[in-house]
Length: 413
Image (cartoon, rainbow, N blue to C red; front, side, top):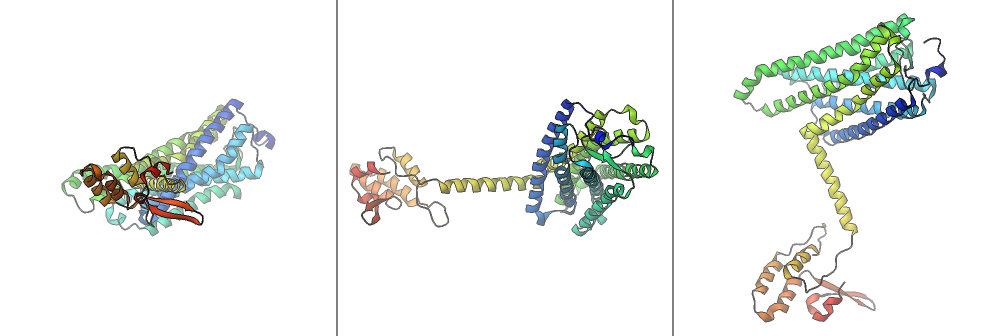
């Protein structure tokens, strides 16, 4: 591809229908990833004081997914719609750096998470000593490790170029054919950023599975005070396995296509295969929030609690902005009128309705009295809570309802 001009590199080799399809899929991924990862980060921030060390990697994975979403999708979507890359060579380099950085950060982060889970389950004596400080150091190491391979092509170790389908940028998979440094970069990338992490993840969860199976009966027969902690760690392991499977499933097609183009024969791979592999790879940004928000109890409970608080605040603000309901027709049944009186009762300074338990007791007493007690009962029932404002020339005055003639009640608002 060395003889191809830059203008030709940045023109889509797909049909317009395929480009529109990719733009639509990217838009869906972008919305879902933004919403899911932002909500996950918000929940983690709200419960930051109770985060376990292993959950630091969940938060870091969400940060890398959100970084990929914000840096790639806003450029890929309009380029797919326009049927060509719109932003020039410099932005193409930045796009490729972000794609490699955040993609490798996510994979390395999952590798570290699997190792920590294996340490806690298989070697609890050492795993229980794993603290938040250790987790933060590992997170920093994850970013440093990913940065080495992301910055390498900018230092002439490897190359960045347009994707074979033309509307995005990534590593130049055709460069090894004429550049030894590019070949060494891709070999190291494939070994240390795909084969080794996948092997560590596979071995870690295999050891966990064997350890759990071997100790299941012992755990059931000897329930210790650490059972709750063990269950929480077991849940983290299961969810981590789910995220790893989703992530590797998303990125494996791209790895296979890229290695085939590099080491076998690039001419037999159509651009549409690269495009579909890239779509699968970008879908990895939505797995983490879906798994942890839906299936991790403490994240789910925290999200439900925050949602309930927001709904309560919205309802409270709506209730405060609505006008107070006036007095109703006294000809309505006594039970219905008494219920409405309770809802229209005066409010204390804290905004809660005032309780008039004595009024309900008096209502029962008044109803059991003789025929002429009706007026007195209503007066005694409504005196603590029902008042009327009378307009005068100098303002208004507030009087008790029972002090006014019965015939004026029909004129109340």
